[in-house]
Image 1 (tube, one colour):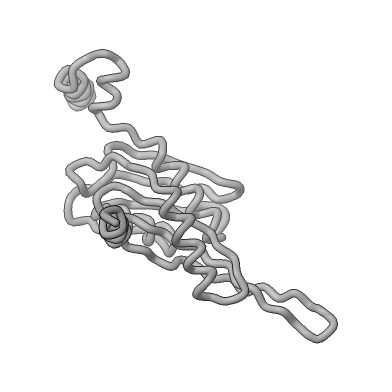
Image 2: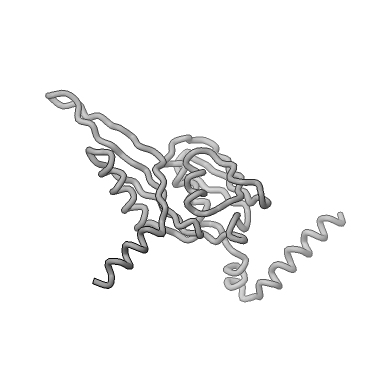
Length: 182
């Protein structure tokens, strides 16, 4: 019994955003049978986000299935200062390509439709994003997640290379200083 309140609290920490509903019709002898597909983004606005897809005969049921799928598919994305990306990334899925750029404070979310929902749920405040190719919401969301999974924090890069974060960042500054003097 102690588990149920904890599970409810865990579910309530996520916000969910409905990105797209698709209505499909199957033609049968008596007319048309309609079905619905929903694409939902969930996130805790602290660096965790996921997406899900659900199909059903009724819209609320499709949304519920998509939300459950999204909660099972949550990933963590490292954010710089809790507001933007550490570095520029690109991702693709099918014909959908996206480019995500880190932005200075006060820029806001400059992104279209489905990508904006992902960044809102993620808790990102400053980002510039461009979608090239497919404008299909499913491909755009999957391409955005493909890009976000390649984001590395300086801490994880330093751990992988067995050096200190300060050494890694001082090298980056030295490279920037050398470029500035040329």
